[in-house]
Image (cartoon, rainbow, N blue to C red; front, side, top):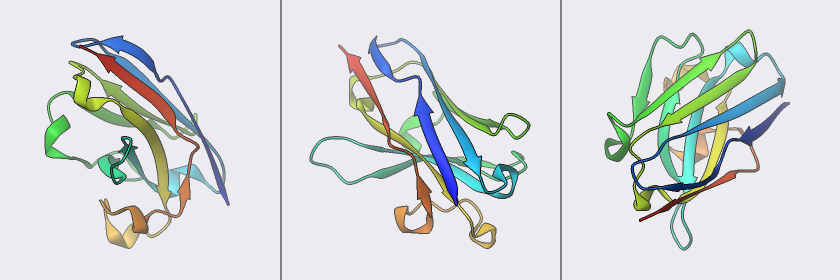
Length: 126
């Protein structure tokens, strides 16, 4: 069992920055591939970024490459998403997720992830 709690969302102007955090408890955090997803109203939940348990490998969806950075601190059981140069189209509820099957590498599909946080709202105004 893994419990995930996101924080750090809010309202920001276009071009601004936010840092999301996801605190994990339960099953050993450092063994899990972790990911960030987002879901805008009326749209499917989409992969944003993922990171291996060691932090050595990361993956991003094309629309956030060069602007977002995923990282983790296994000593603090915390996952981060640094978001810079935010755009109105980044407005969504952002979710962190844990994948227990590390044989998948950094999975980009929603169904590969086993545990989810409750989400945090990010709103970018133009």
